[in-house]
Amino acid sequence: MKTLLVCTSVSHGNTRRVARAMAEVLDARVVAPQEVTAGEVAGHDLVGFGSGVFAHRMHPELLRFVAALPPSPGRAFVFATSGLPELAFAPFTRPLVRLLAGQGRAVEATFTCRAFDTWAPFRLIGGINKQRPDTDDLSTARAFARRLLT
Image (cartoon, rainbow, N blue to C red; front, side):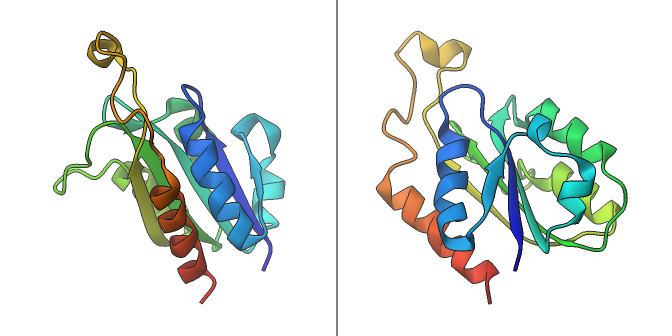
């Protein structure tokens, strides 16, 4: 199975660390949106799309990239890292999942984990989740990736 992970990781490299953990299991390449073309995305059996969460939203760069992709019947998954916990009634990943599904992609699963965050008010105290994603988070990301292989 040919797999690609498209990842926007801008603040502390949290999301890229999670993507690399998944990529180990999936034998996948991790790229930023500007490092890949729509044609390359279409050439993969499974594509993961991930970013950090900013103001309860996935990164705008990733959202713009996905919105510009042509419709595709391919398999996909979404992953995110965030300083704050995800709200059950408003998951961070929901808008991106809907966008991908609207393009015909089969979104198989989502993954989120907590991560180091120095967003505005948290900067005053040196950030939150200072050691995350930790080894447990990365192990959980690998386990998530293994489930995608079945």
